[in-house]
Length: 116
Picture 1 (cartoon, helix red, strand yellow):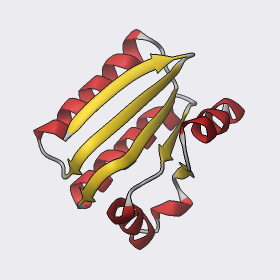
Picture 2 (cartoon, rainbow, N blue to C red; picture 1 turned 30 degrees about the vertical axis):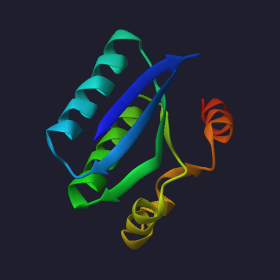
Picture 3 (tube, rainbow, N blue to C red; picture 1 turned 90 degrees about the horizontal axis):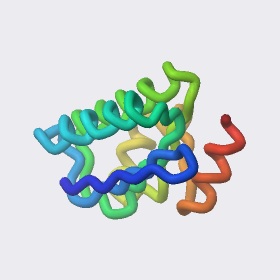
């Protein structure tokens, strides 16, 4: 899995590409987010899942962990346009009721700013 993270206007934007399966890449993702939470005092995050082909239970655990990190700091996390398999996994696990899902970056930013 490839991770690209940037901060703009106080929002951490994470773009994932590949498979979210709880591999060492997932630990790298969590460390990257932790750095931004500590260094930049970021409390809002969008995670683009449009290029994630496959998610397993460990990958779902990573997403829940990210959500918990932001919400425990009074922030919010929005998922952007999950691809077919991740969307099915979120629905199957009933996490669509916990995660906020946006269609694109613009909608995600709007949702995050209104949540803040």
